[in-house]
Length: 333
Image (cartoon, rainbow, N blue to C red; front, side, top):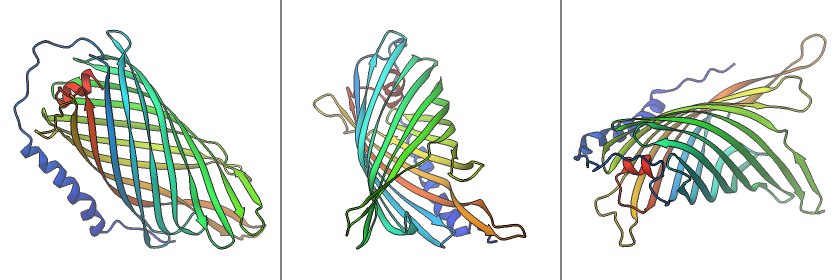
């Protein structure tokens, strides 16, 4: 049995970017703008937020003593509209691509590429002076080629359905969020033999899971918001031919900053913002252990965790864009 240690180099690589992000706090103490009157509506007016985002991640793979890299590009946005003085609705849509390079993954492939499509919405009750309760649904769909050689091509299609309930609290310059999420994964793989044109399709067993999350945002100034998000999830995988299900746990932490530059306002009434995110993940990888005691062969499994680090860069367009980041989050988006 091999025991994996987190080396000082890994700790340094994860910690230094986080310290650099927190260092923005000292730069951010601009005066707060005072609101002439306390807002009372859940959504002040119909508004739109657009987003273009790039994310790069690297994961240590202890099983093969190597690393995996992944990049993702997403473009989309969401519309928020009032339903009444106390209720609102949010509709979101985005899409993009993701590519991954690794030593031995997905049918032995060293590289795969997928297309991404995400859609969903939320309904919520919100008091801009106190907080909100929210119920939402998301559909995450991905498809693409994961393997190709001179003999065959393998493609995968997968979908994740998510239902989330969240509660938010507002206190002075701080926002707090707590939530729980149920998710269900489905998908299929297709293997095409190039010489004969034969196509073999296999359905993946449907997997269920849940997720607990929490986060906070500090509005350091009208133009800068710093955030911390934590979540823990468990996926329950069903494998054909095995009596027990597999539990795969994942922990994720994110530091983020949203900045609205002084020259960000556009003539059309929109405002451009910039965002930076740093993340850390523990990702379980199932390994199989085969033993042959008296009486027959026994196959068991254990989780070997890999450690992933990521950097996320984004450009955001707000319309209308005349509010501070805090007012936008509590009264518009």
